[in-house]
Length: 151
Length: 144
Image (cartoon, rainbow over all chains, first blue to last red; front, side):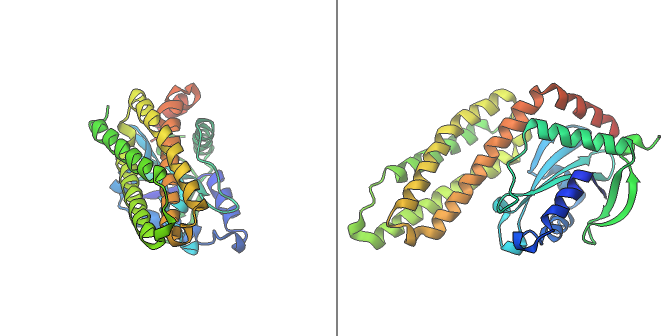
């Protein structure tokens, strides 16, 4: 499966790993472990999915914070979009449940903003492809969703 | 439409009764150790039952329609209030040092339950009603 990121995801990830004293330095490893531990069918049909359509799913994956020994309920929340027709997923947002950067859970306007951003960045070929087996290292930029490939 | 709604409602009732039982219990400090053991065991039972309930609802999260979600949320609100009251009672109790780990696990499961309720409200009621969300979701069907 190919994984892409939006600018919001990259910005929030960078903010979490900026200061080690915040206790979020394991976030990249925890995201990679969470995603690589699941085969594609489970990534799509995990019981953490929050929106369900024939063409795609939206998932709010609960992840532990291994750096602070926090279990899933107190760890991170990873929001991602995954296609049912193509092996493609887009990481939309990551936030911690505890600590100085803890965030409240998504409401409909924030959800809408994340999806609009993904649509616009795909249209403008601004998604970045990342390697989940290599610490989310960037493989390429200027990427788009399958439906925008004809552009 | 979710097929297991009746089973889930039973779990809600069980959690409410278990929580109410401990919340209403008088903590008899003459027998401190016995009391700690009894309350800790009950807390662990509520925590396990609540965690199971949260996982069951998560398993069926996208199957609930608006009416079912509204029913579940109506069941949840008094339970969450009761759970918060119980946690507060535990924290203020002289028994707390002997119950700390069980009380923290209990607090985490209450927090998970609260998050589940927020998600149910957002994604099964607010998002489907939000025209902007529906429009962008429709657009994404073509891009998948």
